Image (cartoon, rainbow, N blue to C red; front, side, top):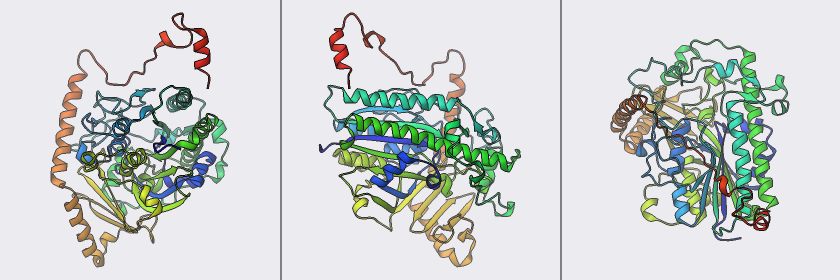
Length: 497
């Protein structure tokens, strides 16, 4: 076992941690049983692109301009791929990372697939028009209405490719002459909506036993302003759905988790067949969760538990004792954890990190640890901030006011303690902490300016010739398989693994 292990980061998309115990996932269960499972891990910004950019940089979204799904990820921001590459790792990406902008690598030497979502500014929200809808890209409830079984879909086509190319890349790593340790990211788009699953995974579950939402749509008087806006963003305020459609969607969601698990099982088996498992650390996580009908909400974009809490498993048998760790962690901790595993040191870069390595928490859990989050995407009209400490979760936005939940006694977040006069001092303390941690007014102004600029740039780039930023994977067919400038004997022997 070398000092620099190989590292495999496996990501699911929109996988809510509370749903994992309900899903049939033998491969993920094995990773959890043999590794360290962090049971209280949060997305720092529950939306695809900003969650991933904060994870890769280890920095809060407002610091790097990663506000929403159309925010450019600046090339000047060091990522964990840059850090590991500098530490001597070969780095590769397979699957979704939702990079926006001309840089589609961000430290990875190699990218084997395109992305499933666009790399331009077309999905820029507009906080100045909260009642408007971008119907060509906003969520709606078609994913719920049309949930069910399909043998092929846009997402299934994509993840079939991700799984295949991940396994093929692992085989290439097993037979490469490159002696450097490797870091690889395999990022699937399931169980992200649309809620569609193949029959074989659908049939793993008894349809009538699929759990329905524990909390249905709340009375209008009990709905917070952000949730009310989100209902408009996802068209829940204009679309009637039936209980059977809800059950179908949740059934397909569970089946899609099992689909991802199927690929994870194949990936782990490939590591084992090529004797790379003993020196490969596997980290499994997701970018954010999914409301799945709880409170009448779907998808993500808020800090309620189903949307914001994600799985985090560190699988490193022989390095750490297996178990469950209840310390609060977040995606901001992924970058420093990877750097810690690699042995890299760079005090100048470390000073910018807002997270910390979780490796020390494995042997010394910290029950008082705080994690924070920001939501700056569609559905908001101003920055929304979250502070999670002990059993408490505090959410605040200037126009929306405060929410305070005691998750130990109120796991479904139904009682907003901020409305109680006897908690006024506690709420004031949290609000003061928000202003200590963030320059609220500056962030608000920065987001509005960024939205204006991106809408202007996008409008201009849609005129005349279109030069896309979307990543184009390339294959050098002139050196693939057998060619006459190669020795057949060398090709045949060199490609065996």
